[in-house]
Length: 442
Ligand code: SAH
Ligand code: SF4
Ligand code: F3S
Image (cartoon, rainbow, N blue to C red; front, side):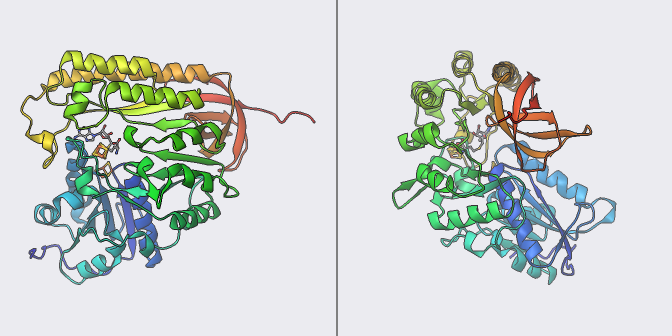
């Protein structure tokens, strides 16, 4: 049993704040926890004043994990003692250790957060409360209905991972691959649209592995496409090995499915991919992209990369650079390898020195930055719809996203959630400007 913390007991909190640190699914979980606490009658507040602060953590790299401990220190500055709940993937991975190390009140894993109100009540009564179970019955049926959401909303359709890449903690923190049921998802998607969403991004650690009784992600997308008021569908993150022909075909003929594909490859060297247990080689990946581009030539491609995996040589790294050159990514995320406790790669001894990793990351990011700029420049002159997400800093300025997920700003007077016909006129490194296309005279 965990020893009671000296900071307990608390009274039942009246205000709450949820801070999410991780991937889009972690952000989605954060939104659902906020809805759950609001349904209990708590009011949202700033981190600095809330009675209950939920830190919704990420365990993917060491830096992400350490953030939670510095945040706990910050929350307790100036003698403040909010109730602190650690949720998310660090909660799952470290469990009781967090209570021992940081004397927090609640620890709740990503598959157990529907129990947050109970855990908070138990902590208020005087003992730290912990739940990192991965129950068979899904948490989703126990969460309140979706309320007000922005024009672009997330919808988790699949969780967990069975791929066991040798560097990755996700199979341990999120558990095995589980797909939510078709009907349940259609109900939630409709609720999101009624609550204001014009765009839905379907989320999963391997979202394209989603299946329900023989139906694949493309069947779900084709059904959601028919929801009145839903203008755009996106999905992320996909695994190359789960990219079936049905989904590729959907990119050719489902109008609301946006021309954007996030398909991480991690490395361009087949030898390293093997050591990573990615179960696909460099050429498999490149041929797959050929098939996607054949049905949707303008598709914007995005990826994730790890540099400095143990044993990565300069020649391996150059294979990554040459793959990047061949693909021409519109956007990408790149990271230095971070050994994670409990993963097979953490035991490898042929580590790449830190200075070499830094150098490779810099070179890779320079190449990816150039490609992003080139992709953006190539879209200048195109006319497209921009989904307005918010107002800009300048008077009359609107900000939104193009179909290719580029940030676009333009002058106009539109409501948040409007789809505005814009011609892209100039490209900067991270965003584009555009002008509103006047409706043509009849
Ligand atoms: N399921 C997704 C990714 C989840 S994690 C997929 O397979 O694509 C997001 C990204 O974090 C990964 O794609 C990888 O690039 C990076 N990542 C995961 N573990 C890491 C580690 N130990 N060190 C550095 N980067 C890592
Ligand atoms: Fe991690 Fe690999 Fe699973 Fe992605 S596919 S979540 S990188 S184990
Ligand atoms: Fe991080 Fe967990 Fe997402 S480890 S990346 S929050 S699945």
